[in-house]
Length: 256
Length: 361
Ligand SMILES: Nc1ncnc2c1ncn2[C@@H]1O[C@H](COP(=O)(O)OP(=O)(O)OP(=O)(O)O)[C@@H](O)[C@H]1O
Ligand SMILES: [Mg+2]
Image (cartoon, rainbow over all chains, first blue to last red; front, side, top):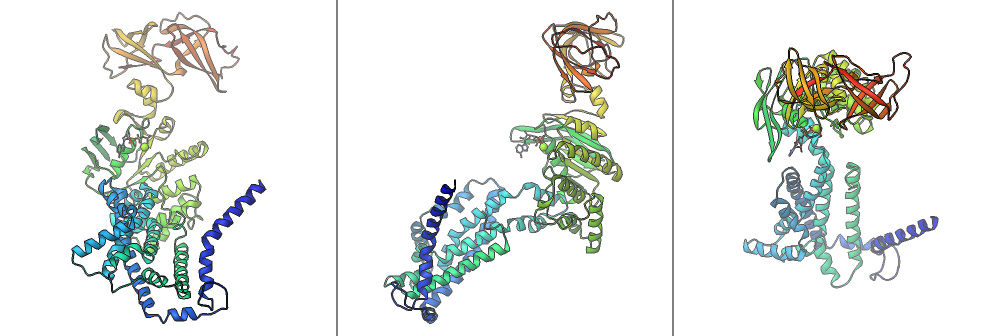
């Protein structure tokens, strides 16, 4: 038994290494005082320094944050409503409509959204990117909220009404708090998906505006510079903070 | 106080309730009893307002309440799973109905403390429902439902999730509570023992209809149908046909057994030629080795097929000539009783002419 256990631990260790070693290398090299990702020369902050002077990078980062915040917020509201409706009513069409963007290949989404925006004569830019992100984020929020809804016993909302709550009070005091983990998890997922979406954004971005993934891609086309490592490290830190915060606020949110 | 008038409820093509009418008096402990799926919960949900009847009316103090949303009906429900809000402490749970009607914080504090005292859990206020045992959850659910003094309490199988011992204790507490506060209880259960023990009156339901409404002792002694006799307690059911009516007695030809004399029940639709069932409680059947010639008794020969010694009583299953098994109960209390019957013994079963209760099929 102990041998089996040791083997299991070894396999687990291997899996973790495979997952986290590349990330670890990126972090290490972002502090490496060398232009090449080859050998350790010495510790430096200069790539971060350079990063914060790179105007294009900064504006791409700002764009990404704005887009992610707005699309996560809108998708969370719409997705929550969709998720609740999907649970409450036996609808045939809505689940398909909400969930199709999840299953559809990104490239198809990108092309069709591009065609759609052109048809509407919309200029491509922040707004078109945000709309596109909202479109594919709604489904994820809806799924997360619906899963949470099924876990809420119907008798709880009935008990609230029975004890004197109006439908709105019942929603505010019972449904929403119990739904919160699902909503938060959905919002977090939407934010993360939006921040790192490349394919769809690539199609609907137009020429003027860029996001972090697009910017990183255009830089990597030349070479993987330590600057790219630095911005990746910062992205990682941001994600980590978000996840920790969620776990703090709603201990149950990340369990599912 | 609560009047249910010809209420029907259909789900697609399925009739869950068929023209149910009931009258429940103020202060009454009223029980809806019936097998699983007979519509008890459906009826309770209509009274609570979670669901609407397709036909009929529900009146509270003479006024129809079917258009009133659940939050404005002066009644509360105790759910089978208690339905305590998991994200609120016990105190917040009990305070919930008070907050909804806009009580002041001081008043809320006072009444919640009182309610916790009433259910003997004064120090559990800061716990979350997760941290309570089944019996404690039950008490908190009761405290929450009673804290703003509803006119009527609906209880849907509130004790079915508890173990036998705790259930018995809670039954006694419920009886005491109902007596003390005098609120009308409408109680749902499929456990006939519980219904008989708790209620002033019981409505026996069967497939969406009311089979009989009566006091527990009358339900047991004078069932109005084969279904009720069978559902309430143990009962022997002997099919037959009425052959003769004379004064207060009827002669019934029992299938495969022959004629017996039996008392004519009051308000019966009895008539010669009708199919009927003689319902006989096991404790009213005598079992002996002697041969009886008593005129006022029906007696048949049989063989002991099975016996079950239960300490205070012994249950015998006696096989009659027609192959039917008759259940008889013999108290083990008779002093100096010579012997028990053994399996395979020849015995005679007998019952007095008014021991059975005749129902028309
Ligand atoms: N919303 C619904 N849709 C369809 N059928 C329903 C619905 N609610 C109840 N029924 C059906 O109505 C019948 C009565 O259900 P109900 O829950 O009232 O039974 P019950 O007497 O409470 O049984 P139990 O003792 O098992 O709780 C059942 O056959 C059930 O399947
Ligand atoms: Mg039920």
